[in-house]
Amino acid sequence: MIFDRSFDFARMLSAVDLVALVLFGAILLFGEFQTKWGWLRLRKSKTLSPPSSPTPTSHSHKPEPEPRRKGVQDIPGPWPRLPVLGTRWIYSLGVYKMDKIHEAYRDMFERYGPVVREEALWRIPVVSVLERSAIETVLRSSTKYPLRPPTEVTSHYRRSRPDRYTNLGLVNEQGETWHHLRSILTPELTSGKTMLRFLPELNTVASDMSTLLATSRDAKGVIPKFEELANRLGLESTCTLILGRRMGFLDDKVDPQAAKLAAAVKVHFCASRDTFYGLPFWKVMPTKAYRELVESEETIYDIISGLVDTALAEEQNTAQIDAVQSVFLAVLNAPGLDIRDKKAAIIDFIAAGIQTLGNTLVFVLYLIAKHPNVQQRLYEELITAAPPGSPWTAQNLRNAPYLRACIMEAFRVLPTAPCVARIIDTDMVLSGYHLNAGSVVLCHTWLAGLKESNFPAAHEYRPERWLNGGPGSAATFLVLPFGCGRRMCPGKRFVEQALQVVVAQTVRDFEVGFDGELGLQFEFLLSPQGTASFSFLDRV
Ligand code: HEM
Image (cartoon, rainbow, N blue to C red; front, side, top):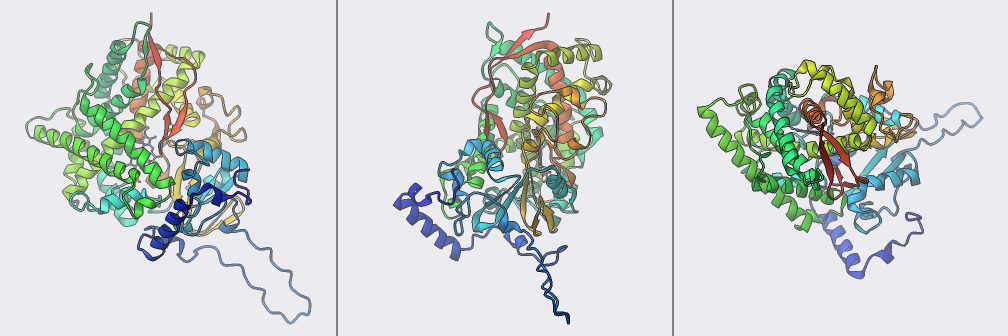
């Protein structure tokens, strides 16, 4: 077994590695590189009292010793736990592959049971939970300012650029600063009214995507790198929503900016993964992953910043897509925020929509393509709800429950975000272990949703389970593609609507096919592995 205590860790390290590790440990020990949220771990317990010591009594018989309660230190997990560095070595020394971390968790749950403890830098425990009850306990306890572990490397970089950022951004901020940003930056983005007004423009985006699919096919109807088009769709639709204008990323000719931006977003996710799961050498020197992160962050900033500036200049003269511009302007006109924060928020929103939406579209269409019966039923529903040539209105979409079921089931079987992370802010008992406030917990919603005990025939793609009231309470905390509570993804409404319109348009226009199996890889998000070769045949 890989993680037996007899596992010979030293054999895996060269002498140079060992010296580097020792030196690194010393630097960290005496340096100022403690994680910024480590203090939470040290906070006083709120709800649980420590095990009580036996009270002296006048009776002669000895009181029964109380069973020792199991704490975080008792949770099984990879071994050895190194001083300072914890267990992050498992991803760096070839035990698990960095791009297969989704499989690593599956393996660890099989090996150690439904609760697994890893240790991040400074031996801070990171607890992974698989049981539905544990996931519910964590996610139900959402407070006013829910805490999600920040991506430390982005925070580190942003602190080094006060010319561009005054804070860490919505994704990485915590507490009152996060709440302030969230309440100012997201109301337009999350508003149902905004989405409704955006629908006509989304129809033109979906129709342009269909044209692009038709013209990008080879003689057999195959598009060998569909994921690139899916990312362009993500970029175009998000820009249309946020900037209030069409950008032309779905035009026939590949826009070099779009390609550069999509590539930078991919590198950014991978570098975030490598710095998060790898050994934290980036904290003391600019490692390859850190340099890639900085480079991609700057590329993303520069390109989107250019788009924002152009949109802003045009805004002075024209009101382009009347309804949609409100997201962009609402952010720019928000009171009480530095212009750097507004610009950074717009950039973050656009960057957030590219690969997330692209990957999700690949997954949904893949599952539909691999299940011809599902595709046929969906097609029949769609042409009844909106015959070819008619638009996707709110009413037409309401009349397509099977479409929503296909998307929801895809989120259960192949979600882009496979777990929801929290730093718990009260003590709690999870699967029999007492955890103190400040513990980092990863709720593995994806793997839990694939358990037979939660969903019958869990490994099968069955959209029907979401019809007529859905699969019941099992779904509440297990199928959470956008997270939950106050920190839930503010892009949820937009993404759901965009997916519905684009999938509906695509399946109405084409019979979608996929040869073979789609591989998966972990890029901080769950992503298709390699290229995704789809066929799109005209409906007769
Ligand atoms: C398929 C597409 C998407 C998926 C699957 C997705 C998923 C998620 C998830 C799981 C979270 C964490 C939620 C939590 O901790 O409870 C999140 C946060 C976030 N997402 Fe998305 N997202 C998507 C698209 C978008 C888009 C298009 C935008 C912007 C327009 C966006 C902006 C954000 C922001 C700003 C946060 C941080 C929110 C906060 O901490 O307050 N996302 N997303």
